[in-house]
Image 1 (cartoon, rainbow, N blue to C red):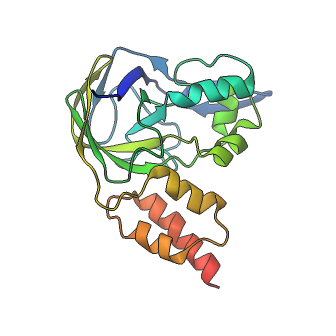
Image 2: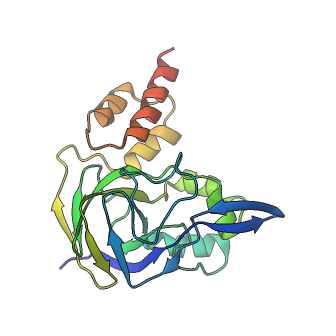
Length: 217
């Protein structure tokens, strides 16, 4: 039995918002939808506000594990709305310690590959009206992750999720997060092993190369 399933689909365009009397523009405010039309570089009707740090071919589909919602609702003491973390796919059975960089999944018509964990930013605090949430996300590693598109296609709310490829090096999203944010000093051997995974997104290779350089001095 396939334990992986879609809970919510969401998409949205950048909006003007205000948080603590400060205006900002973000694409994190997504709305539930019944289908996603996924192309190689974007989802139809879904855009980022700051392409320097978001979006691009390595970060087309944002995924967040549904299992974390109950944790955060208990932690924050309130119910969360769908796509509370700005994700396109809220899924069950695909947590950060269950997926590896380079794993390939077919979701509906689309074929998607895990490319990187999410490097969370403070907009998540604004989205959920909580100044401590970002720090808690980094502490727990409940970041979510991104998928690149290998084959374009439509994903509907009842699409099946099928794993097509398990990457042989088995580097989980959570293990990279732990190494980068919580291991001090970080293992040079682990960094080299992660960097050897060709499928890892370029931005995360840069983060790890900077980390390596910092601790070799």
